[in-house]
Structure formats: structure tokens, C-alpha cells
View 1 (spheres, one colour):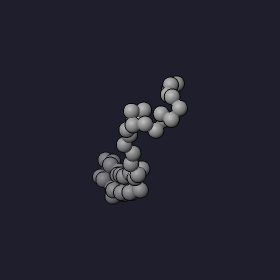
View 2 (spheres, rainbow, N blue to C red; view 1 turned 90 degrees about the vertical axis):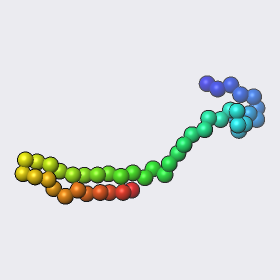
View 3 (tube, rainbow, N blue to C red; view 1 turned 45 degrees about the horizontal axis):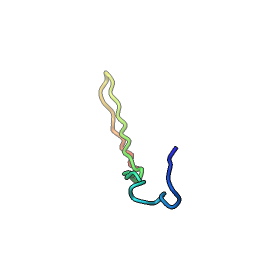
View 4 (tube, helix red, strand yellow; view 1 turned 60 degrees about the vertical axis):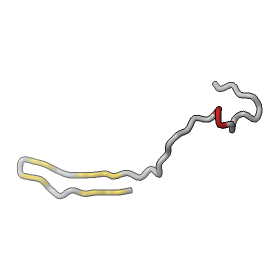
Length: 45
């Protein structure tokens, strides 16, 4: 629960800064076995 007076919700002292990003990511797939290695797939979103 947060206690504020009317009109204080957008004052700088009442806010906590956050860092956001665009949600992009990298997914890397590879394979290893006793027979050797396979190709690597790279997916960027």
C-alpha cells in the first residue's frame, strides 16, 4: 500500500526509476554427441 496526498502520484520524489528494453533476445541452438557436432542455429527476435 502506498500513501500519497492528492496530486502527488506524478511527483519525481514519488517515482522509482526503471530500465526497460525492447524485449529482443537471442536464442542459440547447437548439438553435440559422441559422433561429433552439428550446425548451430541462431535466432534473433
